Image (cartoon, rainbow, N blue to C red; front, side, top):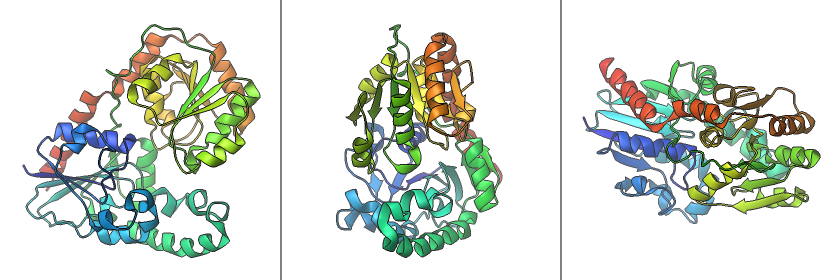
Length: 364
């Protein structure tokens, strides 16, 4: 069986890239296609592949400005040829799901989410407060066109596999398609407790982008009088630094060993935004640490209230601050938290994704 893998772009090891890494391990002989590859930005497992890129790779400052080329991405993804492949597995949050393939090739899309900025989060990314009134006026029709194209090309997928029930609902809403659910892989072997006692502190590990709502975690911890460390980088960094008060520390990008150590030190790990799944809460739980998250999106599928953390059902920083304090004051059992996280491991993911591909081939 000849297999091709497709990813939107390779510019860092976030949740989607970690899923791609696990798929690379499950299909070791598969070829890899992506619009853009920043060398050295992803794991050795991915870097060892012969990676085929699109013309976006050669556009000016593409490694830094690839999001500015959004209107060109539909053209770029359609230029790849998959003649001779039995299966294409796309890992998609933007345009990878819209590859063109022949009738004999089966296309399984591991959908991280239908593209947020084109559908329901335009304001968070391209509202006037982000890009100015002129920028918003220019971009609104472009993103509306992109949403129409995204819906029109949804039929190019033979089988959708969603990362959560929340994403499956979005696929049904925007594409009118059913999706089976395969939760993303979490390295529950690497992330594990070491028996150390937690500090009375909070931790956020996140890309610094608007929908993550990092400022709410900052305000909540300031209100609660709890020190907060923030791991990650992104376009929101300068704005968030300007909002930060005493007790809030920005650590930037750190390696996995440091992240693991920070999970183990934290009294609670926070997820203030609504995530499609949320790898960080599961990594934190694998280290035996409780999580405070908004009761929406993937958190409702990964956090067990009162057992592995707290889900905040009321909106606003006051409710989030109260949840942080209550969680720090509650005695959670690290072994129970760890046991819950174990169900999201790599072996389970590999078996489930292979089964999805086998089922797609069986229905061809």
